[in-house]
Length: 263
Image (cartoon, rainbow, N blue to C red; front, side, top):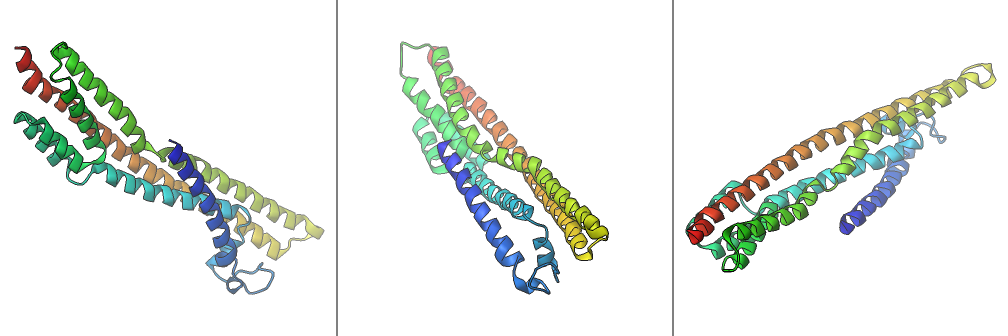
C-alpha cells in the first residue's frame, strides 16, 4: 500500500512536469503562431496552446490516465503468471490426484502470479496440518480455507490497484474541462464588453479556450471510462477464477487426502 502511494505521488509529479513542458515548449513554440504575442495560431498545436492555463492540468490528467493504463496492463499480465492458468490448474489437480503435494507446490512456484500464489499458500498450509493427528479432518480443512482466504485478501487489492485513479480522473476530467470552458467564455464576454465593441482577436481566443478545454476534458474522460470498465471486467474474471480454483483445491484435498484418512 505504501509503495503504491509512492508510485501515485511520482506519477502525479512527473505528469505535472511533463504537461507543463509539453504545453510551453511544444504547443507554445513560436513556430505555431504568426506573431510574437502568440495570439494568432496557424495550426492545431497553436490552437491548443490558446486553451489557457487549464490545458496543462488536462494534459496532466491525460498523461496519468495512460500511465495507469500501462501499469494495469503490466500488472495484470504479471498476475496471470508464466503460463496458461487453466492448464496450470489442471496440472496441479493431476499432481494432487497422484498424491504428490510437493510436485503441486513446485508447479505453483514455476507458474507464479496471483492464482498460483493463492494455491501455493493453501497447499503449504495443508502440508503443515496434514500430519497433525490431534486435528480432525474438518479442522484441517478449515485451516486450509482460512489460509486461502488470507492469501486472497492480500492478492485481490493488487489486482484492483490504481483503478480508483482511473475512476477519479474519469469523473473530474470533464469538470476540469468545463472549468476551462467557463474561463474561455468569460474571456469572450469580456472582449464583447470592452470599449463597446468586440475584439475579434480576444473573442476568437476566448472561444478557442472554451472549445479546446471541452475537447480535452471529454477525451480524457472517455479514455479513463473505457479502460476502467475494461480492467474492472478483467479483475472480475480473475476473482472468479481464484474462487473457482480455491473451491476445486479444497474439494480435491478433502476427497483425495482427508476423507480417506478419516475413513
